[in-house]
Length: 586
Image 1 (cartoon, helix red, strand yellow):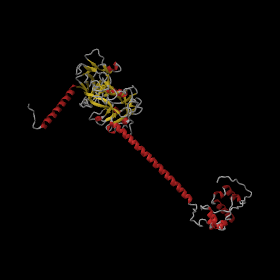
Image 2 (cartoon, rainbow, N blue to C red):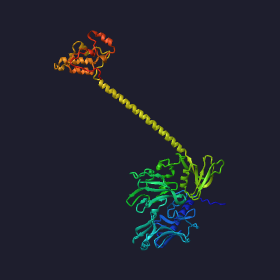
Image 3 (cartoon, rainbow, N blue to C red):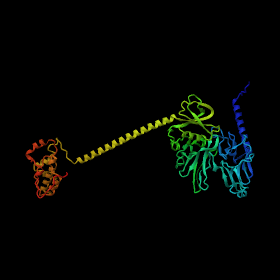
Image 4 (cartoon, rainbow, N blue to C red):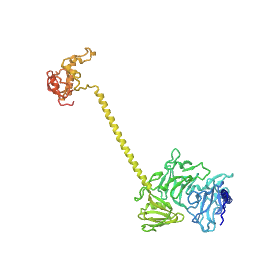
């Protein structure tokens, strides 16, 4: 066998590249040749044609899915994909809950007709008994007949499929119906999330049932007007994720900032409607938000907007909400995907059994397994990702899994990183508690020290005016008492007073003062005696003062001056024309 080996391999690469460009160019021209710009009353669109926007950005056409079901879809016309299984970016599906089962692989015999009465419908030309799927019907046949010449159905460059009335110059006069009011799982600029108070219509996104089945799925994205935030809820209304408030900086609290840089948000609130929408400067590429069947919401280039698929009811990170979870489920338990794994229970020593439910989507399967304490995991039963096979038992530790090509097995596990996170949470809490305790003790110690220093400072100030006597002071500090004994106490008077005083009054005051500072408290007069002695000059004081209380040894002090002291008590006071009570507070 001979192989072609070119001398210059890069020429082969250039030839291959040019061939691919030529193929794409031909395909685009084929689409344009088969494309229709608008439908007028009496026109129809079959499975071999496409209704494209003026710039050929978006096209409306019939698409046959892998399960053989046919849907009328709006998709972008650049051939890009947004998911792992390689399908086109379907922006809108007209009959998502009413697929057409056709025996032909190309969906022949299916029409989108716009009849003369103004009714836009999907019908099968070969099935006379089948009821058509009505997309739009005018309020009255009379109004449709009057406007039949100016009413058209077209796809706009925004991706919006509309039924509209035109002015004579071709501009839009009135939009009668639009696909943007009935969005599926994809949200693009121009669509709304909110509520129309006049009609009661709610604009929201609903995920697919599975990655290949566009039936209504378990998750819904909507705008909550009262709270002013985006929410993702389950099929039965349980809120699992919230975006948080829209801050003044133009970003939602719980959406990653880097995922919001390319969006400009708009909030509209009137008496007729309350809705939220967004625009983007990136007009050169399709910008959309897509809500997947797992609850994962992505934006441009697949960047995360919300991870509702990681909300289990026990965590609040990233906007997740808490709800009541089964007593058998603990923080850290998550569903982990094992690609290509199949039915447990084929190995030896397996104690599992399984159950089959054909109607659920993958999100419903996860919710049902999480709520059942015996459920160990699940997988889809159908090729399109719908249906559930649940596995029950005590543990998957000894379960052997049989490989089934392409299947995803969702196993409930407790991830190691969750244990690590919990451990670090406890360590952080312990460190924080220790720091708080140490700081509190330090603050109390500083406060107590300040209090002690303040008390000492006050005592020092108070003691500055009092004479301090100790054993080393000698007769200098006892001058007042010695001058009294020497009958020279008038020397204590300030010389600046000259003779502006009464000597007897001075003698009496010094006498009383020395009585108040005697060594033993029991020898001192009480307050009533002092007041009486100071105010009543008729009382004769017969008690002589003893040495002041500035020495510990009384006998030594008294022994030195016993010749000049007379031992008396409070009873030795001679009182004339006065009375007092002994027992009184000092």
